[in-house]
Amino acid sequence: MRALIDRALGALCILLPLAACQSRMSDSMGLSEADVAAIRTVHDQLVANERAGNWDAVIALFTPDVMLFHANTPPWKGGAAVKAAVDAMQLKIVQLHATPAIIEGRGDLAYLRGTYHESFTVGGGTTEIEDSGNYVWILRKQADGRWLVAEGVAVSDRPLPAAAGGR
Image (cartoon, rainbow, N blue to C red; front, side):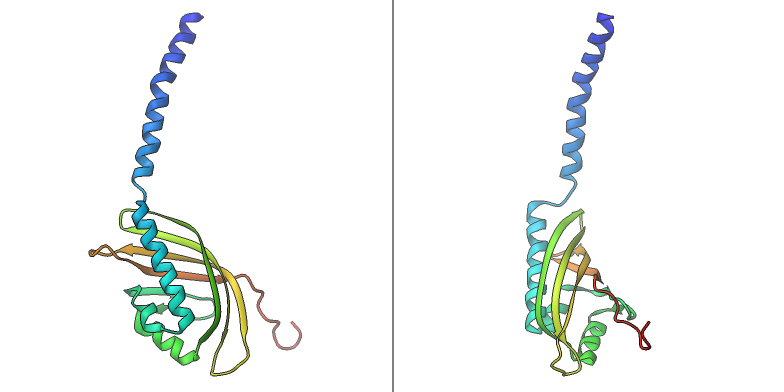
C-alpha cells in the first residue's frame, strides 16, 4: 500500500508542474499587456469621439468592412453606411458612459464586452432618449499594429415601448 501511495505522490509531483506549465502556456497565447492597453485606448477614443459627434474620427477606428448590429434596423456595413445612418437620423449624443468589463483575445483577434448608458436626440429634436445595455466589439489587429473594431453589437436592456392600442 505504501508503494502505491508513493507512486501516486510521485506522479502528482510530475503532473502538477506540467499542469502549471500548461496554464502559463495558455496565458502566454493571450493578449499582451500592450495589446490590452491599445484596445482600451481605442475604446476611450471611440467613446470620446462619439460624445463629440466626430463621426469621421469614430469611423477611423473601424475596419473598412466593419459590421455594426443594432436592434430594429438592418446591419450597417462599412464606414460609409455608418455615416449615412447617423446623418439620416440626425443623431446627437447628449451623454454617453461606456465601461469595458472584459478584454480578451489571441494573436490578431480580440473582443471587448461592456455596458453603456446614453442619452441622445434624433431628427434635430430636443427630446432626449435614454438607453442602456451591453455591447460587444470584435477587434482585429492591423499589419501596422493598430487595433480596429471589425464588428459591434449593442443590446439595449430597456423594454420596448408599448404598442399602439394598449398592447
